[in-house]
Image 1 (cartoon, rainbow, N blue to C red):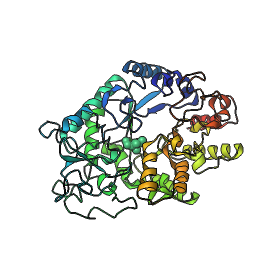
Image 2 (spheres, rainbow, N blue to C red):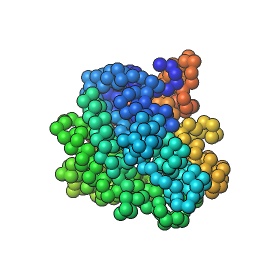
Image 3 (cartoon, rainbow, N blue to C red):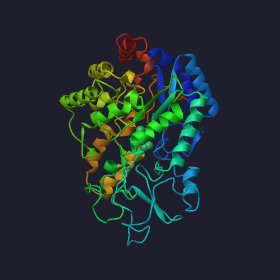
Image 4 (tube, helix red, strand yellow):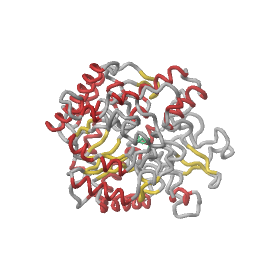
Length: 474
Ligand code: GLC
């Protein structure tokens, strides 16, 4: 609609392109109502579309038009956390409200004044910088947020929370969607200490793990693949998917091992169809995401082999190099320096992706060989993870130099994948009209004049045509 942000009608208008490429399912990142602290992964109303992206009617139209072309639509399901602006969270701030226990509320550390530095219940850091605990003066307690402070974690131990989530999922399935991509679904079950407490809450100091370079400990050993994960997923399967046909679901699974993937995706256990594993996209990082190390083919080969080996008897794999959180593979592990190297790298990774056993996932523009953004200033970035990480590491903890942090952002920052889809060589790459008053929300990659769908569509030697052949072969 010319406001510089992608929308549902825009996607509907491009369905023929997707059908031509040969994809059969489209996963949409979250389009629900959201304050957009984390590009929609902070949802304030699960049963509405954010006006930025359109309306529920636009969603119905997208579904109908997709189905007409034999395409399915999978929505993102973000239920490890909500937005702090969600009505459930607002109600939960009152200790006497029925929603009081829907989130992970905890008092200040014993002997500390609530809301003062160091009074957090434990020393866990959040993925997006700073403590994983935020003080709420209204309730006089802290809430857990593994991501930003505007993304409070839901308490899945509470059966009312689970019931409300399943109800919402059924509402969408009944509306005609074809399944869900489940955001950080392995984080919904957390490891409690036997007294219903999260580890490290009561004892002071370092009981919850080793101190990291940013001044926090790592929550993930206690907050991923917890003891009730299988139970929750099987319950979800029964409550939402049993009796339905022709749907698919895939869980984003940080912290899960290839061996556990076999269990979760083995149909006889009635949990999920597929998981996204992350060990292979972590091979160029050590300790912190921002401490990048050189890519080695042998490490990628070993990780992919482990993933394949684990599901050779039962279960199923999903295959990916790119998504909205990962940089562009052609720049990350390939060579985007000149046209020939770029095209060969893009095709090599496309081949690798499609020739393994499992379901391949292509991220928008990957089929064109789209590259990293090559941003050079912090002002060009929009992602809160990147911006917070810079502040935390360069300015606060001073554990990384500005120069090395900018290099890390340019290599693996999430915005590398989020620049506008390159449809053609026009001013805004066809993402928005060239004469539109508003520029796209994030910079268009200048290389769109060379790398774009219009250019590649009819060229039998293009990356696009290569992907099309691979998909047809599958
Ligand atoms: C997942 C999403 C990512 C988001 C995070 C928090 O990792 O893919 O984009 O920031 O969860 O919801």
